[in-house]
Length: 122
Image (cartoon, rainbow, N blue to C red; front, side):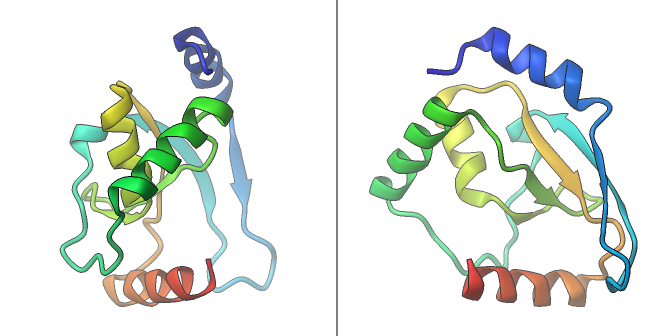
């Protein structure tokens, strides 16, 4: 089980975490992890994927076992692009913050295309 102190250590370390997209990508982007309250994030009205109670329980157990290791992808206006289930699981767990990555470089059309691709591949 992940302890609250583990999240504080990750937060401290993650302040310096960034990644650069590989050369040749559609857009080179510095990815910054920002910790935000899950309540501040809003679901996409176009989210086609829903999670059953069973799936949410599985996501909760995964976060309890491994920690919140996969950041939620969001737009500049805090709309969830990917990670709706993880955000719901975080609320169930009572987490005060979740890791997020803002995809500021994507237009609304590119975000929709990304979501379709992500849901069909992942």
